[in-house]
Image 1 (cartoon, rainbow, N blue to C red):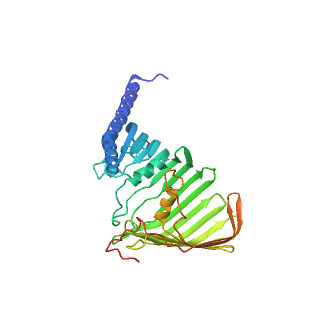
Image 2 (image 1 turned 45 degrees about the horizontal axis):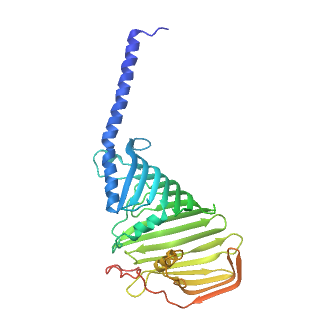
Image 3 (image 1 turned 90 degrees about the vertical axis):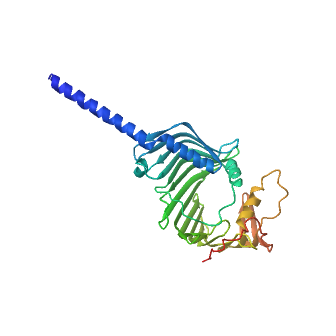
Length: 353
């Protein structure tokens, strides 16, 4: 059957109109998304935190599954640092339609693929940050969450975590916030962490109600906790959690955690209690001082270390430390944790629940 000349012309006109419509959509999308605008905004926000953000190629607009920007070859480094904090193959910023049509600049979802985080560079940047704010002012809002896939965490040339996956839900005040994290450690053992909470601001305090924590290391160890926490700023934080520690083939432990805010005399303190059929632990630890002690453990230039800063006792019928097994282990220390930088005065108007 021979196509008539009029039909051929009609098809050509329709094809031309469709092509023109597609080009118009692409041009409109580029104009609305303004990749240069959002790239400049991200770089300005990074500079405000003492960071430099660079891309291997200019950001590209995308429409599906939702409007956004495609980022290739991300590098995030502290100002003047020789090693980047983060390297990522690609990322994507999802944007709400209201932002495209002149509304306030907002990012509804952040997705990062194959990020590599350098722990040493991250520590150096965090150490150079100014002091924490005196109080909580607002719950940061993430409309549709964050997703990180195929990530890794390194320290020097050593891979600490691999196959890292992170997913979060919407973060809004007064609404449940879920977070799920999975990875493999240096030995290839799967790790998993899940957290749920309802964040909200009460006066000048950030409150986490309905707090649930689930941690596991392969099939050998599982920790389940539930409770609540609050933060008034700096080291003025508190928490109360109860749950169970499950060990494969062994009796479970009852676990109690209580975080006591710092004041003018004492540092931030964590009280840990474990009660099982064969072991009992009752310790008070200053988390910030303990973290400092741990950070100096492998430093060649660090002064000789004493015992870890803790107070309490540990009793275990059997203690396995690598290839070494200790029967009838008992440890008792009565040295009160020394006040450190964590002993910051709380906000004057911050009532404790």
